[in-house]
Image: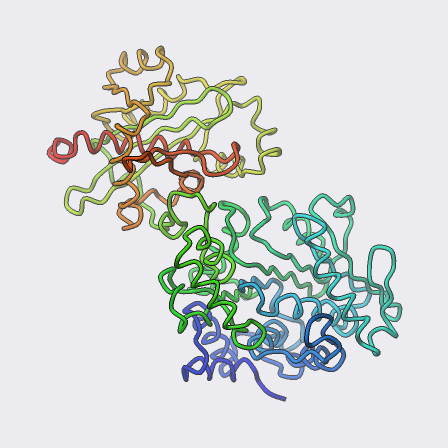
Length: 547
């Protein structure tokens, strides 16, 4: 038996396989743990090899030029399977990995591997009464993997003897095991006893409920396994972003979670998309399963047609994107830096406010500048009406409830925004931290009584007209500062979400104004209040630095 984890890592080290930094980090760690076991965990080569032996002996391709031929796994697939199945408790021989998060570009053999894993877990994973589920946001998506497994069974004389198709599932009589597709809205999500869950195209799942329900369904199993597999996507502040961030922290060693296996095939930088030497980083099956010339054609087309680029970056290179009409890329926006508000105690700031009535968020901003580095720091608060809050959380599938619990969002009593609550927050910042806004820029839509109220408390209010003449240059500067990581916004998920929802409208003179780039429920208000503060910053930059 071959140790494919070590073989794969050796080829990465030698340069024979081009891998991104996250893959290099992960396999370096796994190789070290094989050579020098940590705690009670050991690498059992026999257990690691079982799924590979099963797949290559019994599973057959169901489509294309390989239809009917035995599945021959690629090295990256073998290494991945051994990483999942090989690390076990030395006493119980139960698996360490309980969750695997796999990012891999399209057409690299993900579906074939997962369908085969599902069949293995039905028959040969030593789990009596195994329940295997493929899940996705929509049942049709979940069925893609199920249908692939069903075709595999039909092509295999051995498997077709023992696995039969029932109305809603595949069933293995000898082990009383089943494989069934489930959609997010399935009526059968409660009461499951899942041993293996495969969540396909995680980037399309907007809320955590499906993940939480399926994970909970595994609580009674001895060694459950949940595999999340996906390309990158255009939905932001969803479970994909949560899992991606968690996976990076596990790889980097920030978080310790031995049960979580991250496998991230992606470019190290969006700039690598036009460099053929880097393409393998996101496409481990390139040149075998995935055709090199096909990818070359896509890249060449994107070079001359910018509209094609976001899709290629997202699906072929796993560079996270917003909507195609987005103002900035996710990498431009993303900044994990944080700061303590105490740093700006008794300091001056520039304020911004974007007020709504019922539907949109209301957002307020305090913008600080470090006089030595000229780096910007942003502190915000947002508001929603209390009466419609639970409905909004449920209907919009936006984690407002989580943001509220984190202290990033407050509720106004009733069914509308009470602007006095915004006044209270500015006074809290002044009284509790000594933060004095020298100017507070507000959009002209704001209610007159709120402006009067703020002025009564001594806050200097400046009307900010929402047009290209006022907003274009500050927005361009803010975009440049975000790209340069010159803005530390305390890694606020609300502001990050709003930034990713922001598109631009460009006039014939090249001036830009912000617009919503996606559906109406995808808000930009936190971005708008920061932009108002940026208008103030550009109006008073030198004066502000001297203050």
